[in-house]
Amino acid sequence: DAGVIQSPRHEVTEMGQEVTLRCKPISGHDYLFWYRQTMMRGLELLIYFNNNVPIDDSGMPEDRFSAKMPNASFSTLKIQPSEPRDSAVYFCASSLSGQGVSPLHFGNGTRLTVT
Amino acid sequence: AQSVTQLGSHVSVSEGALVLLRCNYSSSVPPYLFWYVQYPNQGLQLLLKYTSAATLVKGINGFEAEFKKSETSFHLTKPSAHMSDAAEYFCAVSEGGTSYGKLTFGQGTILTVHP
Image (tube, rainbow over all chains, first blue to last red):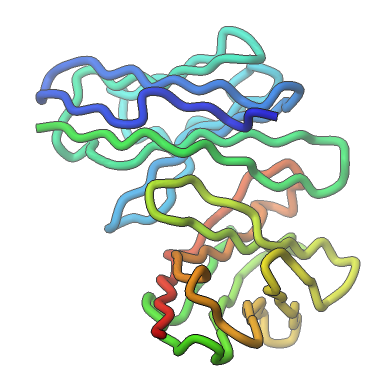
């Protein structure tokens, strides 16, 4: 199994630009989560999907952030326009329900720097 | 709402010494609890999980954790530290007792191992 795959690994952009982060979950997993990690706030859940449907987006900071999951094997997190305070590591994770307590499987993250 | 407190943002031990990383949780329902490890520039990897089957949980790399309901604790231990254990460790609790991976994370504890 290839695990959760995120791209790009690093992204540097200027304030005001649009940024799109991509995620391919583990095949067969029905839950997908987007987390953000910063020194100040630690790991924060932004949004999660079940069977491609957004279930809870209460962690999305503001309207500049949006996430989609057009199919079971692909999700995007978009920031438009980006701001320096969005600089963080963004993690995608997936899990499989229905088999007891399912752990999260994380990707290696995308380190975003907004200048 | 669930919450996790990790006591000590940095822990330093000598190689061969006991490792003890502390975690206390707050949950309104019987919790599922997890420990994850994060190596530099990588995503989080599951060390072990508590799912109410047994209070002493054994994980990978010689780590174990004990669930103590009366103390609302889930401390992580390893009898003898190895240099390769140097990493950041996160305790997490499932939100609302969910089993599919919606987790609240602690702030993390950085473990340093000295030769």
